[in-house]
Structures are given as C-alpha cells and as structure tokens.
Image 1 (cartoon, rainbow, N blue to C red):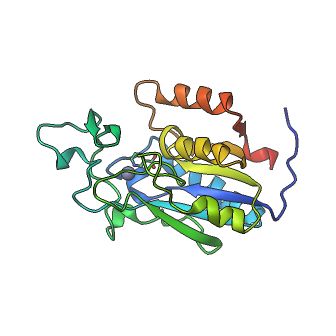
Image 2 (cartoon, rainbow, N blue to C red):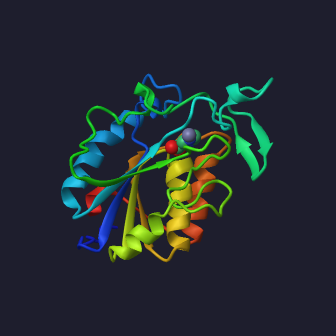
Length: 211
Ligand code: VGL
Ligand code: ZN
C-alpha cells in the first residue's frame, strides 16, 4: 500500500533519542541502531519542522541497575510510581554517551527536549515522565505552534518511540511511526506488544518511502 502523505507546515518530525549510547558501541546499544541515521537525515530534509528528544540522566539515576543493591541490568523493580526496568548506565548528562550520533543532522532541529533528568524518575515518553502525570511541556509547545500531525522516528521503537506515540495520540495529535526509521531493543516480546498496542489506539505505522 503506497498512499503518498503530503507534508505541510502543521506536521512535525519527532526524532527520538538518536544518541551514542543507543548506537553501536554504546552501553545500551539497540541492534542496528546506527542504521536509522541516514534515513532520519533524509526525513529531516522533507519536513517543515523537526524536533528531537535526548535521554539525559544524572549518574545516580534510579533507572540504572547500578543505583540499586543486588540488581542486574534488564531486571524489573518497584519504584514509587510503579514498575521500572533497570537499565545499564546510559546517556549520562554531559558525557559522550548522551551525545547525538555524530552523523545525525542536527542543524534543522528546532527544539531538543531532554528527559529523565531527575534522579527519582525515568521518562520514556516525550510528553510525560514515567509517573504518567508529570508533563514535559511538549504538548503545549506543539499545540501553541499549531501542529496537528506528529511523525515519530528513532530509538527505541518499543520504549521511547512507543511511549511517545501512545501519549501523542492521547494528547489529540494524529500520530505516525515511521517503522524503517526506528530500531527496537526487543526484550521479552516488547516490540510485538508495542506494535499491537500502537495500532489498537490508532497510531499509523508507515514507511519512509510513503513520504
Ligand atoms: C530508552 C531505555 C532507557 C529509549 C531510554 O530511548 O528507548 N530506553 N532509556
Ligand atoms: Zn534512559
């Protein structure tokens, strides 16, 4: 199916977490994460507006297994706001790992929204922190600029892209995920669950060649 989606000035590209730690050699490398970079650079050229998110954690962040006694990375624990997967240390503020991939075309990014910067709380979504109530302000920013449709790409499909897409729909935006411009962590079937849930709530899964 190839319906061409005409892009207008009320569309925005949201580039999620294309950072060194999620790419080859990073501490939380997403398989083939680097492959999204040329695809996303092409998309940035097509869109009137592009913004990005940046995972941005203090060194003692509660989402790190190393911040808890006797916890291995990729295990799950209960924090004050509910269950939280514990990750290897990644995307530490100001370090190389939290920098954007060197080939990502950052010049046209109009806004960079940092998330997970508070020690006590993680943030997968670009709209809400993991307590599901603390706002990042992104919805207001997009509404204020008259944005109607959000197109998501980046890392990882089954975590930050997924949570951002679900919240984008909830905030009333028409929401698209550009599948070939994303890569997944895929632990315990998380990719299949994320895709099913996104489709259920009306997120459209498209390919970059439809744009
Ligand atoms: C992410 C796990 C932890 C992501 C961020 O960008 O998908 N995943 N922090
Ligand atoms: Zn993180």
